[in-house]
Figure 1 (cartoon, rainbow, N blue to C red):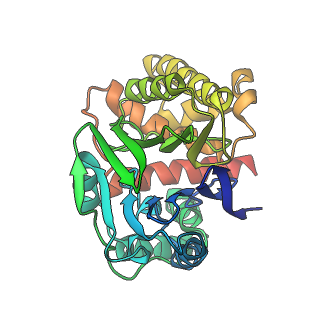
Figure 2: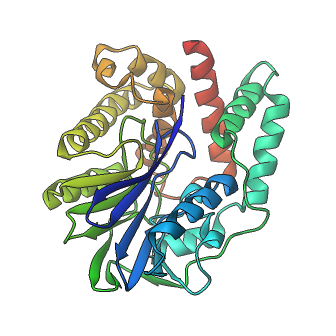
Length: 331
């Protein structure tokens, strides 16, 4: 059961809009306010109904502090397709790598068509039905924008600083990892870090781009910040304890997955074996555990010597077919 939570105050004039358990499209967003001056939004969501509800709730919190800045943490649609709901005069910032990816990503109409086709063929036996059923699950009940939403107005390469009135926010690009353009937003005076999809908490993470070593390095950077509160892209608020568990997951996936790869085991079979292992027990209750096969599909490419790259539609479809098959088996 999913719960749309928020706004939840997490520090002095800092809020998070949380959506648990943090499954597909259940994205967390943030709001930073300097009363009487200005406000900043971190990420927007792809579901038009929820994006509208968040905008309405945000309006009551920024009555005397208009939104002047918006940050998109990366290029996945569930973190920026709601950009049309922020004020037209607000400036939107992301990393340079993320902006390039946003321009190249499949637009909402294309994802909608892909998911709708999936809902029609989900009953078909074999890989086609598994892919279709899983893709429809990825969309969930979301209603996507009819056109490509507003793109960010500006970008940066490695670090940047923005201000919401007198409050400073430090941006740092830590990708490529989950996607090519992952960044974090650190609010030092509040002890809060908005980590985007570099943090999945209680929800199985996905390595779409890589390399994985970059993601582990990004986790180490987040731990070093030693913030009071971390807002993940998906899942509940967390501390360094949960972040360390995520690091343990990736270390295990890297080791166990490589062992299967070196033994010549195909990635779907490797994922099945790993999910049945005793080492997996500590992660088995995370939402969507079958997503390990999506990450293995990326890792296998990298171990075969292919360059790190965004997933093509064909790559996603093949990975979704494998995840759909594992999901059916687990039922």
